[in-house]
Length: 346
Image 1: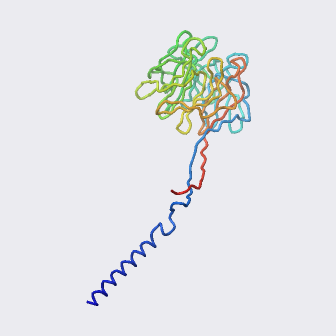
Image 2: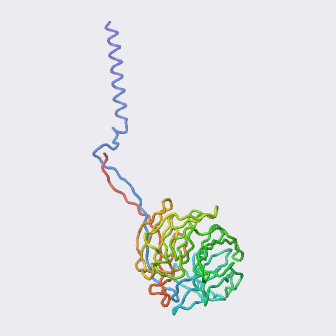
Image 3: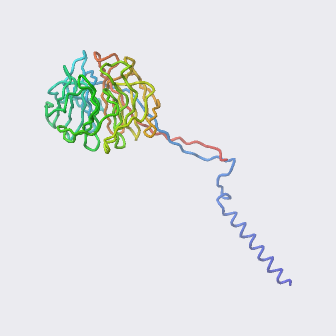
């Protein structure tokens, strides 16, 4: 009997020792966070940094075609001081602000659209003394952008974006009516219908993101009053050829610039009637809802726009109208910051 009790006591002692050992080796016992202590929490936030470049263009310009060319960009045509179309072409290195004269257009135009296709810069349509259908191309090592073809019809106040080597031409004005048809080209000289805008516009803000094209705002009439502008946010799907209105700005807006940075869509500046805007809108691509996420140092409209890597540039533009274009350049980039905080554990 005594022997059985001794065995039982031994078993109990071994069990207690095992439990104590397990408790001593547990993470909580080794100093795991418990209520009342603090822990380091790292959060990241992304915000826009908007600044005016310290350098200026060689000459003021608005309503120009701006296309990427490696780490530089080309400025083709536009409005020069005095509301006159210019045929000048400049190559600008934004890292230094240096600019080199890069030839001229065969036909000076403004309010045109453009694209870089197969190392050539194309200028589609535009306005001169009247709306033109001319397609001009600056080939590598050429001194003049020659006429290489024409659009199906005259078109000014239009926009263009490029997705995977294919340029899409959207919106515009024939001189008497708005152009609803969206055109596509891979050659710059032959054009095929790709779809239609749900709401035809001119002077819309256009950018491509996630294989879709967004058209924000624009003029919907033959005059440029606030009563004939829209706040519609349209999305065109090149795969289906369908366009839908996915949202609305709370105010009508035209002559603005749109850029895609970091998977986000931003709309900058522009004007409502004669009232300039310095606001920066971000468009929620799922809901179509816009929100103001910042402002530029000064308002401007009708700037050329180009994205190089992780930075966008608004080139020239207007504040008082086409008689006095700007020579300044605004850069826009996304910056991600990391913040470490001590927070109590509950």
